[in-house]
Length: 398
Image (spheres, rainbow, N blue to C red):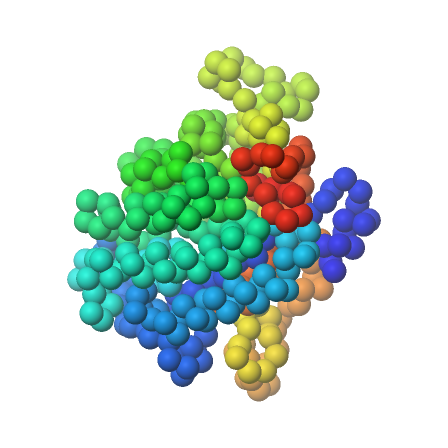
């Protein structure tokens, strides 16, 4: 209703929603009580095992597949007739996020592990998403980024890509593959997917791709992105449907690294090049517009865990809206945590009412997240096109 009210009050500034489910460590505790199989292992940083985590077994786990299907089906039943919901983001059995997770180094493998079992289980999870969304006319997304070994050790994404093409055809408008790792590595190289370049290279031309920034040029512990023009050229080379960047590079604009030229040149009129741009370069927004795509900007997030019993409780809230002067963090509110559901004598320190109308991204914990996007340019002609679409006939590109 928040998004609908905003759209009614702001003609021409249409906002839409993405829905996301997160598995892995975000799975609710009651999963194990109903028979979902979990195992103990370790998260890894650049292949080196670190913190202990407990996550779903990725194969021979029928109760997990049933729960995955049920949450997808609930999302479809609730929202498939809603034209403002344009993309459904799925999850793998996963680890720390919703991405592909395979223990590395000395970290414990799932019980009864073989590479063949692992790949088979991932394909089974993919099938659930395809059947519950793509084959029912909705646009879905899954990530190829994550924490897993390179292809010369185990090829996970190759069979997944083959299954997508087998069931949906090449570059189906109903499924997108995203990679979080688009940026500059610690060696200074700019890449589409740090550590998984080959996975993306092999998928290119078979499936539709999108990229998420690896870091930000704003510092504060993040790896720098470097020159945005070169990164946009890289994304265009892979025909990315959308790219996702972090608010610190937008507030304020990272002009030193040419973010304005990278996303805007030669628009708006008057944006001049100093002659340093590559010959024929077109910024990401005009490039999308020429390809009849729509660019959406994500504006804020609300995270909300849903439990098996009881009422949902607000766990965290973020917005890029202006913040009170007393707040030092560039994230307003940075990440305001609420206590566990049922805790006595404590209350959340903030509520969704702090956000201005239309700046919400919300969701539950398997975890489900909904994202609100602001339309920036162009229109999407979904009829008779090979570009992404949904029942409402609109593409969401960030």
